[in-house]
Amino acid sequence: MNITLKEVRIWNFRSIKAVQVTLDPNVTVLVGANNTGKTNFLKALQIALGTKLRFVSQEDIFIDKGETLPKDRAAIIDIKLVPTDNQGKQVSDFNDVWAEYWGPIIKQNTSIEIEQFVSIRTQIKYDDKRLGYVTKQCVLQDWKDELSEVDPYFCENKTLSRKQREAIPLEFMDAQRDIYEDLKERYSFWGRMVADVPLEKPEIEEIEEILDDINKRIVDSSDGLKQVKTKLELLNKTIANSDKGVSIAPIPPKLRDLNRSMDIHFQSEGSESFPLSYHGMGTRSWSSLLTLNALISYHTDKNKNASYHPLLALEEPEAHLHPHAQLHVFDQIKDIPGQKIVSSHSPYIASQADLAALRCFGRNGSETQVSQIDMRKLDDESKRKIRRQVLNTRGELLFARALVLFEGETEEQALPIFAHAYWGKHPYELSASFVGVGGKWNYLPFIRVAKGLGIKWFIFSDGEKNTKEALNKQLKEAKYEDEYQNIHEIVVIDEKDKIVMLKSKGKKVENIDFEAHMLGSGYEKELEEIIKKSELDKLNHELQNTTNKYHRADLKKQYEKLLQQPKTMTKDEINKALRKEKTMYGFLIAEAFVKLPDESRRFPPKIKELFEIMTQKLNLPPKETNNEQT
Image 1 (cartoon, rainbow, N blue to C red):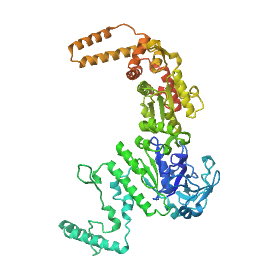
Image 2: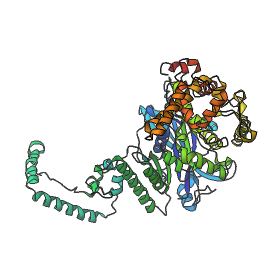
Image 3: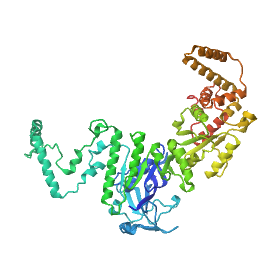
Image 4: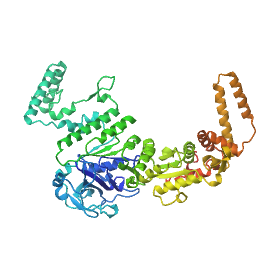
């Protein structure tokens, strides 16, 4: 095919005020939360290049909150096509086939080096004569790289011919696809596929005579159908006043209508063969996609020696499919001929996409924003870490509004509970992901992904010297000029909370972490009660489940002794107990603290600081709004 739709620019279309998006030569995957503009982007492409005409209206024009739509505002969709080699890498000139096909609409970009391209502008604007919105297309003479330098309202008289447009057909398939409905629709992908019967007129007439004869034989052999036919002939006397009669066609008598009577039968392992209408939506959705694959492959084969570059805009291929099927269907999508632009909410599909092909859609107020990872700044090892540590295991992060990063399991258990109490909502309701990265040296891949895809990120960090040094080094590698002290989104536990522990052979270990902060913030009494209750629960559990009477008696003594123990634990004893069962106490601490009668003590200082920063940066409802829910 040797061309690629490299870039798309859109102004004033639905939720998109102004975006500029580069596309992958094979598959571009659009990710992001609901209502961020992914479908609007695909719809814009459909208007510009789609094989079906589409009605446009004022609802397609961007309008800001509280704004009245000006009649002179137009929606603009620009596309840029460039020549490529067989591997999809851009080259300087179109090959002979495309050069002859495009002819005078090929332009030259000489700003950096000579580069040929074809750029097409589609305008959606109000027409006073038609009293509605219409579309207009033209060929652009120039393509400026900076969006701010472009005049979106300029459109030359040089138009694109129908033949030139047919060389780059775009098929759009939305998430509501259903092969059962396609079977009945003449202009569906199925209907278009089966309607293309390459027979000469005499052959068609001969087949239709056979079909007519089959219909007569069926009707003549059925007393019921003959009776119906006789009664329906009364229509001619009542309405048409004709003696032509009525014909009943169990089988469509015209080849063009065959698709209406066709069905597909599918047999899964160990079952009978049933029509697809009897199967679930997953199988029907997948079948519809495979039919589109067949249509595109069919036309690609027909045009293999011609200028032809099919495009597919596909919405949520994972619809109704289980995770393994989602992975399988994405492999099949990659093999469809041409260029694919796929929107998805599936972490499984997103994790299989090329890093360079991910485009993250987000919202800033009423406007859509699009971000991508700058691959030029990553070496192979950095890419491997992002794929292994983020995408392969944390694909859901690509759909988050914010990431809260920390080192270990204790914070991963405690912080979401504190967050729920603070805002009166679960973190997932805020589209925030709380992520334990598994060590102080593992922040970098997450920071790079968040920075590249425009996801806000926060860090809740331990305060040991080597941890802070590791943090600064990773920030530098992520191309941040400031150290952690100057980045408002990073909260580090203060050195004043430091606890020194003596290990074997007199070795000292400094801890400035979650547990140390709890102790340093005056929660000794609450922590002691949590530890004591936990020990009692553990002994009681063993007591209820042991069958050995001697062991049972011993456990009962321990339980009663601990129950009656008036001794107050020292700070050092509390610290050691917390660290002995470190992963268990994070959950218990958070659950107990958020229920404290004194509201001012429910959130330790550094956790409260983190949440206050998040409230400001994410424009979340302030804590006071949610006190009743808390």
